[in-house]
Image 1 (cartoon, rainbow, N blue to C red):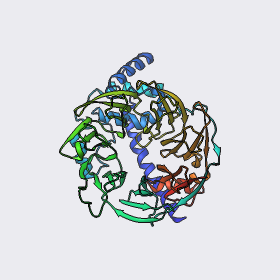
Image 2: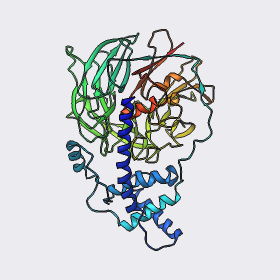
Image 3: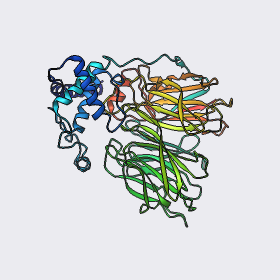
Length: 519
C-alpha cells in the first residue's frame, strides 16, 4: 500500500506542475483576437488553418478531437512547429543532451515565426469554437461477448523483470521456437512448452526478427524505444559463431527502426532488405542492395514508416513494396517496381494526422484472388491521448486494381494490431485484435477475437484473462503442434502508472505473455 501511495503522490505533483504550464500557455493562445465578427473570425481561422495545418498533411477537421485536447495538447505543439514561442513553452528542455542535438539539427522548431500571433489566435479560436466539447462516442457496434469458447488462456512469466515490457514476438517455424524480445535489451528463446531454452543480451530493445533457412536469425533493434531522432538502431545476425559461407549481418546507425522485410528487389539473384526507419521528427523508408549498407536506396524521406510488405501487387513478376506510414502524414502507399532498382509510388489510402495508424497486413477476405488490407488505428501516445471514436479495426477491399475501399469497421479504442487467420477451421478468415494505447473501462477488451460469420459479419469475443496486461505484440502459430493456430500476446508497461491503473481495478498479476491455446 505504501508503494501505491508514493505513486499517487508523484502523480499529484506532476499534475499540478502540468496544469500550471498549460494554464500559462492557454492564456497566451486565447488572448483577444482582432475585432471581427464571430462568423468572420471563424472564416478567417478556417482559411489560416487550411493553409498552415494542411500544408504538411491532411487538414485535421475540428470534430476529430474535443476542444480541450485541441487547445491544451495539439495546438501548442503546432505553434512551436510554426516558430511561435508561447509562455511556459520550451521545446527542448525535456530532452537529453543527445536528443536535443539530434532535434536541433533537424530544425523542427524554426527560430522565425511562420505567421503572426494574431493569425495564430484566429486558428485557435476556430478549433475551440467548432470542435465538440467532449470526445464523440463510438458508433453503434456489436457488443463483445465475455468468454472465448475456442481458446484456453494462461499466463507466462519470464525472468525476474519488475514489469512486463515485451517488444517482440516472432515464431520460428523451422525450429518450433518462439523468440520474445524485452525492452531490457533481452531476447528469450522458448520451446513448445514456453520454457526458456536460450537468452541473448543485445544492445537495445528488439523490434523484429526473421529466420533464414541457411543462416542465423537476423534481429532488428530499435536503439531508443521512446520517441527519438538518434540513429542507434541495428540489424544484426543473432549468432555466437558465424556459419561458413554465411557472413554475419551487422548494419548500425539506423534511424529508430521498427520492422524490416526481405526479397530480391532488383532481380540480381541476391536478397535485399527494406527497413522501416520510424524515427520521430525525421525518419525514412529505405532498402539495402544485398544487405550492403554502402548500397542504400531511399524510398521515402519521412518519419513514421511502420510496416513494409513485399508482394507483386500489379502481377508483373517484380516484387513491389506496400508500406504503412504513421506520424502526421498517415497513409498506405505502394511502391511499384519498375526494374533496375527504381520504384514508382502510389498512395492508396490517406488518413488524418490524428488517425493513429498502427498496423497492417494483407489478407484475401472476399476470396477474389487479390489482397485486401486489414488495418488497425489507435496509436494514442502523442498530444491527443483521449478516446477517439474512429479508432478500431478496418478491412479495405481491393478492386483488383489496387484501389481500396473500407468494407468493415469495428470501433476499438487504442487498437494496436490485428491478424487474419482461419482460427476455427471453417474456411474463412477470423480476426484477432489487440488494444494497447487506451485505458479501457473494461480491461479484458484489450484483446478481442472476431469470429467470421460470413460476408464480413464478425461476432466479437474476449476473455477475463486479457485484463492482466497491455498487449503491444501478438503472434499466431501452431505453438503446441496439434494442427491448429494458437495466439500469444506480449504485454508492455511503459510506466508504473499504467500498471497502477490496473491495480486499482483489482488486477494483481501481470504476466509477460498470455497464451491462448486453440482447443
